Amino acid sequence: MDDYASLRSKTNEELETEAKDIFRTARHWSRVCAVLGLITDRNLYRERGLGSPRAYAEEVLGIPRSEFYTHLNLWRMMKRADQIELYEWAEITRARATLLQKIYGLGGDQRIYFEQARSADSTNALRSSLQTMAGAEQWSIFRIRIPVDMVGMIDAAMERALRVVDPDNPDPERLEDADIRFRCFEEITRSYLNAPPVPV
Image (cartoon, rainbow, N blue to C red; front, side):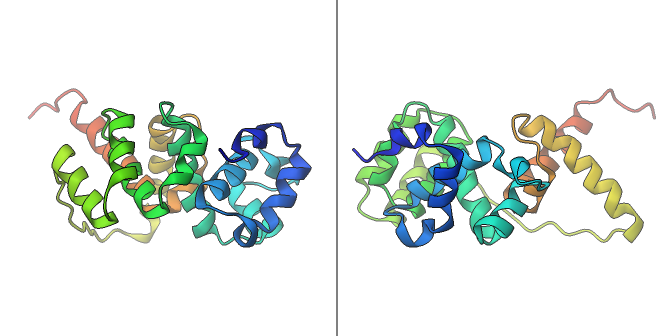
């Protein structure tokens, strides 16, 4: 077992010190997630007078926003997967964890999926196995042209949907993540379909 459990007892200053050099010193992606996740959970960006976790990551830690949000989203998945001990994530690769992130969103037994990730011969083998277990989902690219003055309206709708999709972390900066934007778009679409029918 690594010392993941001791992370929660670290002071804010100790976490920040580790985070500033995390990509060089961390032994595993899950450690990076845990450190950046705890920093975000404790709202250290507010102590620094910054407006968002993204600004904190870029200005204080020197971490690009894409890397920050990738690890932060994995951290949220790790926290929701309460059947899996934190230290166990060190036993699988980040690529396999990313596959679990997608499958966990569909529900099901966390432990069964995790054991699949731990024992699979390769990442491709795991992907095939999970698709068989959960059913492969087909995706397509959806594009639509809109007037410039509607962008603000759509962003406002997305922000409102985010408060429903993830009420624990409705930070508008997260809408830069394509997966989060999809989930918000899905919520808006379902809300419209579930609304009272329009008279014709």
